[in-house]
Image 1: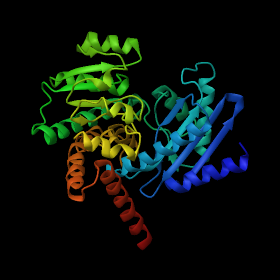
Image 2: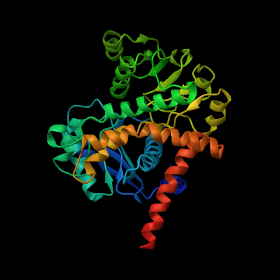
Image 3: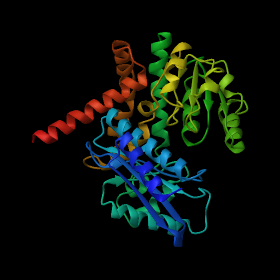
Image 4: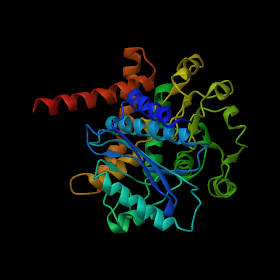
Length: 363
């Protein structure tokens, strides 16, 4: 592709989505190819995890980074955090071992160049250990070890927020937030999915799971008595709640035809293929819980490191518990405005950002 054409495409995408900054870092000596997207910093510095994966091409990586960083803006805003939205993607094998430490030390140097406009954290393909390596070089890496004064693994908090949202959704759909006897089709039992599975079983729910990781499935069955189905069959499971907790865009024209659920409520980002799915979800009378609202527990915990006084479990727990109320508020507004829940959630997030921007201009 002609470089001028590529530049125009990047700039047009940034303009379309409203990003403030997109930065590319390239250090071949350590194998680092990274994109950092900063969507919005009106509420505060942009916070969002560092994703490490192999992409089909650089266009796919850029799109992933732009979409996810925009979602982080809305996630932090609707959760009531004084943080903006950002994301980073490192284009390499997440399973790499040799040279991994050197790569993350170099990426930490890159974060210092951004001077606090972007704060990274653990995400798909990265770990608390990677964050700890970055902390040797930069203070702009969050979600570090509890014993070092950080928030640790954000996954339990993400799962707790999703669980609370399931209670709100079932209360809305069935008149009771009691999950006892409810059948849940859980797609993915990784970090978040496994914690969610434990909570669901303790609440008396019946859970059907799938995953590409055989060891995770064995644990889900042995420790929690989960029913296992192939990944190709999870969307056809007759259930009360379909809970996508792995990759995004699993609600698409193919899967919507097979879904047999009353509620979609999961921990994955970007669960819908796009706005084109709104009518299809409504046509099946499915209650959709906006993903960036209900999976905000992790970013709340990580963001707690930057709250006055540092990370505090009581503060984090209260914020995560409030996701239940936030979802009810969005569903109320969805009915009042006669708009799809995701549209309303984005509107509410943007309204808070707009109000903050206006206050800053009037000072």
